[in-house]
Length: 237
Ligand code: ADE
Image: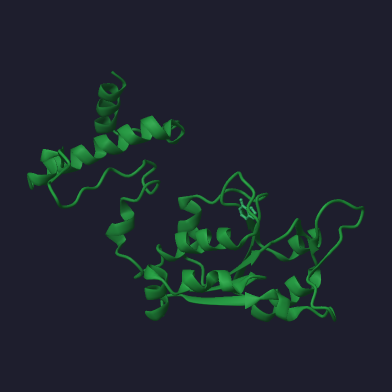
């Protein structure tokens, strides 16, 4: 998979692409990250990429020319072009799975007060990472590409993301590692038992409990299995 990220702040991505799983995915050629500086495309003699909004108002607006010329330089017939903006639908795990199947993604980071509305005519979709406003799309582009890259085949094991929160509609169960006792807090006995079925039941119960406490909205309309129904009845008591 190739991900091109169009930004005015390419330096922000240095740590992101050079660290941990994202770096490993690149080195294994599972993903290519192409950071494109939109300012390099401006035809303005003062190197400007933004201008005052017609009709007045606060702040500056990203101009069509540098953004769309940068887009033209990377777009192919396989590209899916995504504009990061708080006005898009909010990214979720199901969308991340779908996007991880794409061959060629282009993420455009907005900045300042916004961008010329006509840029929207050149994109395939808009995406937000949540109901708050960031100073720009860069952090959002990292969130979106991180969520997608870890799902690309071979980046992490299938097992590692099968039990992720949201993958099965529930929050993930708790994990423990050494030591068995830390400041008097013990690891649940069942996890030391080696009894796979009991461990599976414990984890399902903890998943349901955590989801009920923290994100009851995720349980609305869920098709509970018989086993889950029993656990839910117990939890609600
Ligand atoms: N740019 C500014 N805020 C954003 C958000 N919440 N999601 C995506 N891009 C953004």
